[in-house]
Image (tube, rainbow, N blue to C red; front, side):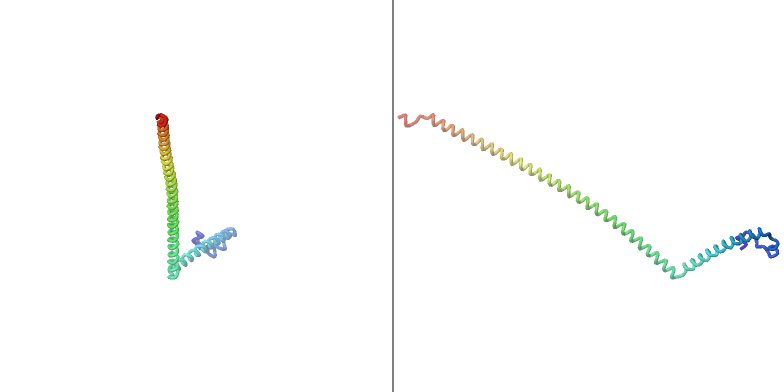
Length: 162
């Protein structure tokens, strides 16, 4: 106890010559030193016990099991992270595929509409030409008929010329 006190313990003859104030002071210092010494001894005992436990084969096996479980947990966490990233990638790919399909469908609708417009325009053009041709034929027939009638009126009548 002399080390924590920082001085030597007084001898019995010295105790008789000490004043009560100094005796109280020494008693308080001795109590503090005893407390410090107790704490140091407890820490040393705990350290020794921990070292002994670390050398115990059962404790070592338990520590190895704990390390294995920690490794398994880390692997599981890494796998979950990889799976989550793969799922996110798959979702992005699916979204891109859907967007591409929508774009293709829109282009197909536009192409179909354009083809229908072209077909309708060509049909209208063809119908217009037919109507024009039919009208021209009809006019030509009317002209021929009018020319024939006119020719009939201009010919002298065979009955009356004799």
